[in-house]
Length: 435
Ligand SMILES: Nc1ncnc2c1ncn2[C@@H]1O[C@H](COP(=O)(O)OP(=O)(O)OP(=O)(O)O)[C@@H](O)[C@H]1O
Ligand SMILES: [Mg+2]
Image 1 (cartoon, rainbow, N blue to C red):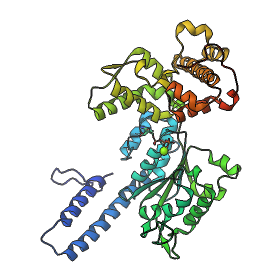
Image 2: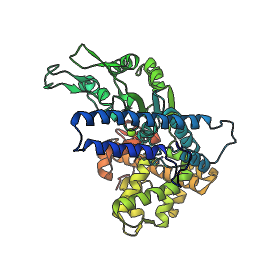
Image 3: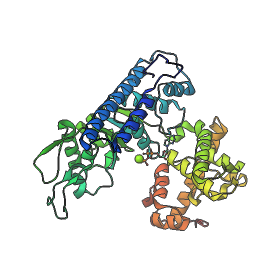
């Protein structure tokens, strides 16, 4: 990764990173120069921009070649070794942490895909790091210092979609008081991240497909096409293939977007990394909150190792930040949010009450952690069912009574395949009243 291999007078070789930094210093010195004419400054700035682009291109090309040259037939390496290899090739992790094989594979694919302009589709459950992965792809490519524009396709009202993505001309519709650039134009030269792509309505999908094919956009109210060069990274927590089968997502768009396809693992398939992640986010939270790293009471630690984390890494990270904020030196179960605490494993005295399914899962579990998870999952399910019976299947009411966030409650119900409507009109059993 050095471009000057010879060492002169004991000075070290210059890396691409150091060279880019020097060009940046040169650019800012030029920008504020008082001894040069404006026109001369502009000319030199243009030259240094071209130089920086060339260095960026060479840097990512070298990284690409190094990645491609990594022998696929090499014997399987440990996660730590694979991560180390990425580090040696100056891979930018953007804080992505973990040695899980599926995660490392995703990072290795990202490394190879980053310097190309091929579209990438990232899928994975909520909170598994899709947005983080999009940034990793952007940061490891030649467009790293160009715009990175993120668009949440699920959050734009249908009638504003076209204008939001492609911009509009003044007067194109009521309220369009001025010409306005869309997200694609803003991402010109860089990357556009189309988050929640599965939520894009069908008319929007047609328009997106047209842009992918022609590499041109048309502002709303304008007949003139504008060329755009934006690298597309899309993400979804939906199964796009299934949406295609159901006619809710265009198959041709799916194939265009998923030239490179990366799937991120849910936290439950990397449970062995939970202790490391707790420590990693514990240190991060301590720095952010300017406190000493949190200690976990044994009961809380056990709980956190066995908890199901339906919200994946985001949920784990949020929990650690919450604990670090609320607890003193040592955090205990009482510092957990109520809806999470409700999933705490049943106390030993209630063990006989563990339903058969959980008892069977506990009996067949091959590790203590799995056994606890099985019991904790069952406790969670039992709590939710009892709660829904008590409120006649009204989710909002259950959320209110348990002081839980409604959408989180929905996530939990989905996780267990519980349908609230199945509880409508049911009579609460004695002792069914939650909290
Ligand atoms: N491998 C990882 N290492 C460290 N932090 C991670 C990792 N994966 C995710 N995170 C963190 O978890 C949080 C959620 O990640 P992110 O927003 O990328 O998830 P997402 O898949 O886009 O979620 P959603 O589907 O809900 O939009 C972020 O704070 C992110 O930094
Ligand atoms: Mg996201």
